[in-house]
Image (cartoon, rainbow, N blue to C red):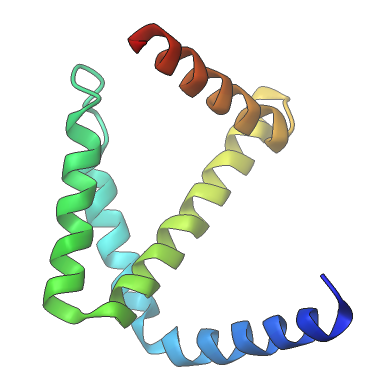
Length: 113
């Protein structure tokens, strides 16, 4: 990315962070609620995406795109933290954790094909 485009992107991120800040607390609560509902369904992995999508659609339909964006940011932050924590506790790098998930997804796709 050229320096001008990079500065422009950073400025846009800063503006959006300030704009979405009032949504942060509610997005965090919703993330926790969504994770409590979605985790623990190892017996039916297809249920998890449906539960998560129901939460996302509920937020979008009830509160609009800003709250949905804040929720997406919250979930992304939680996912990043979870990968870093898992890496630290397993002695692997975060990249190795992500590579393993990616490998598992490719293997699952091949099993279905």
